[in-house]
Image (cartoon, rainbow, N blue to C red; front, side, top):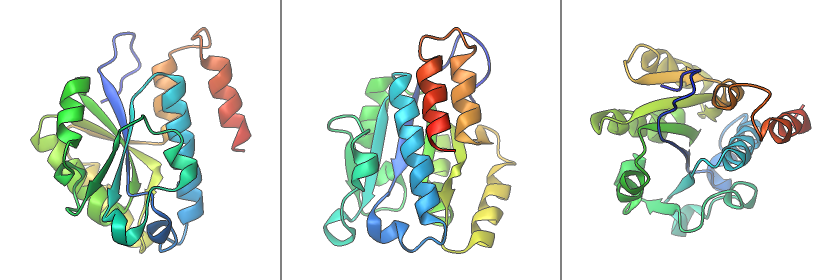
Length: 187
């Protein structure tokens, strides 16, 4: 869990399956994409590692450019499993980074997001799920999954801005102005 305190756990942002063919299937896909791109940019401002997965990229295509440009070099992981932890090399990368809390965003809430959250918890990695950065083809299904996840220990469900402001702690943070400029650019 991300808490508003000076000593923060080691975090990384994981963006799940932000591929054009999947985004187009989501009713609010463009909005989710915009919020995910924001989260990736904010993470980069705060020196938080940014990783991504791609679901069967040879069939569904690559990560969209507006997100890919913010992903760390060599940190896009192809997968066929629904959970990100089925992607070869991802778990090793998270271990190398010493990740204690996974910031999670992407598609689809009812499938890959849900399974990734559960697998992270099995590996004793806490999860902060960005509620403004996830969605599903059926809104009610997404709400049901988020409701279930909200009752499980080790998971926080918060809007991305709330998490990044908590990581900044105050307006004295060196990246505060750049972050607020980024926030304002989206409104």
